Structure formats: C-alpha cells, structure tokens
Image (tube, rainbow, N blue to C red):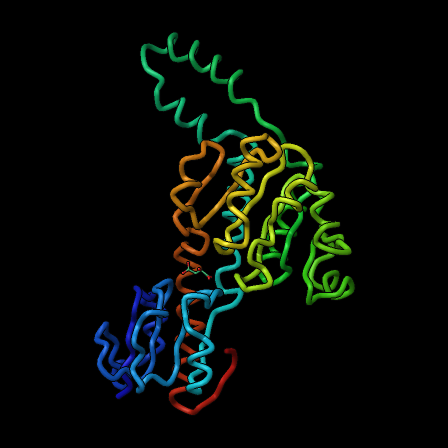
Length: 304
Ligand code: MLT
C-alpha cells in the first residue's frame, strides 16, 4: 500500500487515478510515500523522510521547498497548463471589471429601491456615472509566454486588442509559432512603453521579484491597468499604490491581495481564484496524480 498525504482538498477526479486497493489517501502525516497539495505552505513543515514525491495540483511551486527536496532526491511534480483556461478567463474578467466599472456599478444597482419609475430615474443617473472605456484597440503587454500567457494573448486579440509579448526564454519565431497574435517586444522596458495594460504570467523568482517597478510603470500609457494573477511580489506594491494615487494607473487587478492593497478603491482583488474552476481543479489533480502514481510505481518522471 502507498500512503498519500493530502495537505489540501484535491479533486476527486484526481484521487480516482490512485486505486483504493493500492493507495491510502489521508491527512495523516505519519510516514507518507508522497504528498499532494495545492496552496499549503510547506516551507516550515517537517517533511517526513519517507516522502518520495510531491505533487502540486497547480503550476507554481513556490509553496514547496524545491531545492531542499531536490537535494533529497525527491521530485516535485506540478501541472503546467492544466489550469491555463481558468486563469485566462479571470484575466479577461479583471480587465473588463476595470474598464467597465462593473463592481461599483453593481454595488450601485444593489442600492436601487422604490417603484419602477423611481428605479428607472436612478438607473439613468447610474448610466451617467459609470461610463467605461473599451479594450478594443488598446495595447496589452503579456509578460511570460507560457500556456497561460499565450491563451491570454489570443483571447485579448479576439477582443480587438493589440498584443505585445515578452518572454526571456522564447524567441520571436517561437512566440509566433505559439500565437500569430503576438508582436514581440525587444525588451521588458520596450513592452511597458507601449502598453495600456499589462498582465504578468511568470513565476515568482529572484529575477521576477519587483519586475513591475516604479520605473516601468512610469513608462506605461496614462491610466494603464496592471493585472497580476501570477504571484504577489512580482509587482512592487508600493509603486503600484503610488501610481494608483497619481492616476498613472487606473486599476490594479490582483489575486494575492495584502491588507494595504485591500484598502485602495482602485484595487480589484480576488482571493487567489485564478485556478479555481471545477474544470481546472480536476485537470490539475489528474495531471499530478498520474505523475505521482507513475513515479511511485515504476520510477518514471514525465515532468518535475
Ligand atoms: C497555480 O499555481 O497554478 C495556482 O496557484 C493553483 C491554485 O490555485 O491552487
């Protein structure tokens, strides 16, 4: 019997890939053969020596001490691309909420009361107060052209946006093989200098920490939007808040809010929802369960 320790809820579809006659799945931390998790932070946890593999049902692995595990010879599996559609759709939602004043307009609509004539008069005042702007013809910069970035680029392009992309690891030719909708920027600074909005799709690493900086925000078009559904820390939040105050930025869409960000009216914050669709949860769980099972049973490694 293999023992699997689950540190977060893992979709049943994924757990079904681990047959009950061979796998015992529980939150019992004693002598597990493998760990499966979503966002549980493993850095401060004492990881039992019996652990032979770790499976993260998501793309990012920054909640796992990967270096420590690599030294122990323990592979860390993840699920790149498995939740890319879910993230793409929330990026579009964030951009639309920002440009069409959707949240304040809905809050206003919730306050409407009275008879039909009174509601109709109030609706007309709301119509004047919540005039938005269009994404069509605006320029979106996509930073990171992996599974999510490419999907965001294609979806934004379908809305009539001009898309500029940047990825330090992907050449112009290869970016075009992935999507004909992307014009590649020569550098990050070049990308920022063209954009009305940017969306980041890179992991949080030393090289990407503070990548959306005061200097780069200053290069963007006035009233620009920053979308960060990747990881907190990629944007310099103090620089973003100052730019929201000055009007340089009109909105900041963030999936990893901090208390100071939550206080700003132009921050559109989600509670780490990018990958939270039933479909994405199933896809991620199936992908990592297959990898963990194959590794435990025959030592094969398809992605780690
Ligand atoms: C990811 O890294 O893909 C997400 O953080 C997954 C999740 O929401 O658990």
